[in-house]
Amino acid sequence: MAKPKKTPRPKAENPKGFRDYFGADVTERAAMLETIAAVYRSYGFEALESPAVETLEALGKYLPDVDRPHAGVFAWAEDEEEGKGDWLALRYDLTAPLARVYAQHRQELPTPYRRYAMGPVWRNEKPGPGRYRQFYQCDADTVGAASVAADAEICAMLADTLEAVGIPRGDYIVRVNNRKVLNGVLEVMGLADEEQRAAVLRTIDKFDKVGEAGVRELLGAGRRDASGAFIEGVGLSPAQAEPVVAFLTSRGETAEATLANLAAAVGESAVGAEGVAELRQIAELLAAQGYGPDRIVIDPSVVRGLGYYTGPVYEAELTFEITDDKGRPRQFGSVAGGGRYDDLVKRFTGQAVPATGVSIGVDRLLAALREKGRTRTAERGPVVVTVMDRERMADYLAMAAELRAEGIRAEVYLGNPKNFGNQMKYADRRGAPVAVIAGEDERARGVVQLKDLILGAEIAESATLEEWKERPSQVEVARGDLVAEVRAILAAHGLGPSE
Image 1 (cartoon, rainbow, N blue to C red):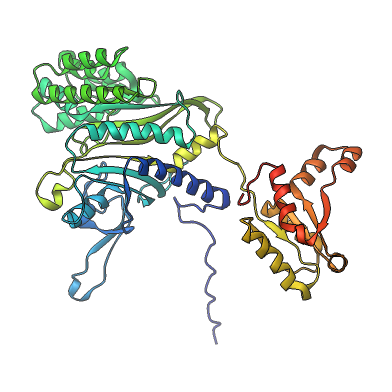
Image 2: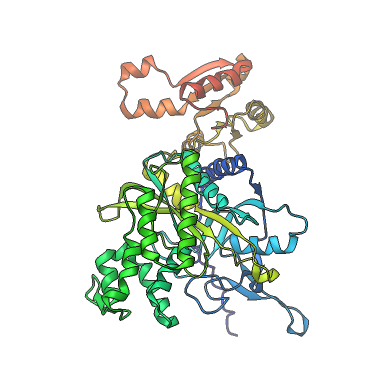
């Protein structure tokens, strides 16, 4: 008789493009989200939590460079009788769900509706170094306000948010442009062919990578990239390409100079002139609030979501240098972006609804703070109450409860207490600041031993025998003073009760 085949064990590994987050990663992100939320709330925005799953119909075709609604998203068909189940998908951003929410509940919501949302989003795209299929976004949007004052407010709030999380002035810049100006440039060029217009837009989007000379080549006959491969150009003459180059290089020393250059670039285009006027109004509104060019600038090189945004667009860029994997210096780059999208709600209502908003890439922002050394590299664990006598578990649990009642993180060791050395190894691995030790002798005398694990690690690393004697890392205290003495040890290391 043949032996039954064994079922292979599942592999303990993440799906490609996903990762696990432990201790400090989770708490640092939570703290950052709360800091960001506090800024958003100070501007009057209210929280919204919508489902992680939406219908494909509601999400729509808003992913870049894809031809099908379900390309780039994790989607599945709902199983219902007669094959009438909906196609569902994990949300790929927080804006498409907002459009559905507003269209569905607009009769009950105030207009304008100001909301912020935070949470994970999912992209079914090829993963790469630092590029995951699940990541956090943190959005704030105003729906129902046609005035560019709403755009100016978002830019100001973005600057305030970056400073609140620990990016100082001088280490970031918020750059602002307007899609209408770009539309005006295309109008001046007189390109009737839609494929050519699309090719011009794709070329404009490469300005940051290839510069003015590269854009001229790509608008013309083409260019060779760094690998030597030839990239075919759009085929425009130098005269045809000039308005695009004038647009991309129009940033001046002052906002007024930039606006004058943009006005020249759009020529007689009415929509282009409207875009320039909106940028001028945004600059004036920001200046009135004290947001100068050290924080927010008009920058024509900002090109975002060419098939998505309808007016002002903005991007927050970190300007400090970091070192890449090969030791080369480079700037950290963009951590947030957004703009005006007046057509998104229209998909549901049939009527244009003005909307503008910003999305912050929380994981990238956290990475930036780590690069600057502005986050704690390791989370401090709880106080660990060791177990010297199994029969006294109630006493040990009571000690931990007393500490927690005073806001101090604490736990009792719940592994096998037979080997005390293993308990101390556990406390070290947990990052515990203090270990509480209470055997039969301590109980009889009404005392406990407190081992300062932070001081102990410092002494073990560098102290001499004489210094060790002067700075004992373990002290005996009265049982009734447990909480006060633990608090004193934490305070000596600059730690609060909950750290």
